[in-house]
Length: 347
Image (cartoon, rainbow, N blue to C red; front, side):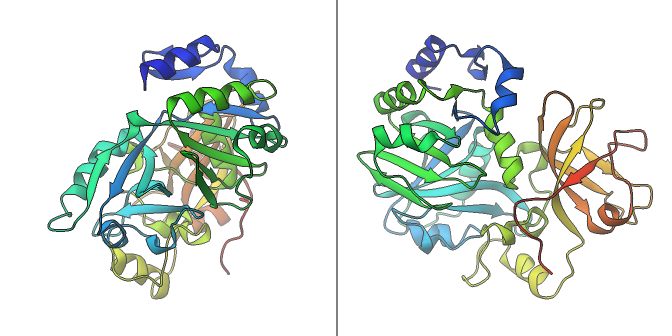
């Protein structure tokens, strides 16, 4: 995190553990207004890989699950980077900013993803670099967030995954029950935007963004879950995160075979557990009748949901979710209850 940005946030009530933002003074209160209030949050837990050069589009097209040719100054997209076995190594948002593509993904996966991508550059005219510390990422959401945001940024993207890039500020509309945006800009602009929004929107810790992602059914791969799922297990085909019409990319053969020849046995659900065992990303699920040697499923993302319990995205064996009781970790773990995602499953 930029030292100047950290100091700015501290002046606005942020509390840190070294460079990790925790909250703005009252975590429980902040968690309670996430879904219905106007909020702003720092997204420094994410990093940016800048990809530019004459062959940038062609290079990314051969590496990622989505159709990179659809990304331009007005359209961003969700995508994933897979192993040759079709397992997701990293999930990301891709957008254009000036003359470059940017891959927005968790900082914890930036270095291994960047290193792996660089292995395949070969003779391509493309440059990849870590651009995290050169820019600031802000998230904002809420039923009335547009009014204040438009006063400082002008017209906003109206549909999910639409974007704009003007006056050196990039805005991406993220799916959500309320209007939700990610803003990428330089330090001086970030301070101006934050100060404007801070009048009627409340600052919240970075957990707020994952809470909203869970509600929206948008998964984020962390180190604990890398190389664990094929795209269809995470519902990427339902959130426009994978293209079945583009050409070859790493892992494409496995992903396509699953779509056209296989039968999906696991998919992602939204789940809840009451207080007890604290879920963590990568934790296994248990079902007494599970017939799979791989277990009944796994936690993808999780956040506390006051006043009690935890909300999660979990990948679960479809037969276990439909016919059995699913628990966290083991046969004595908390029972999971399920609620609908904001998009339907395929017939």
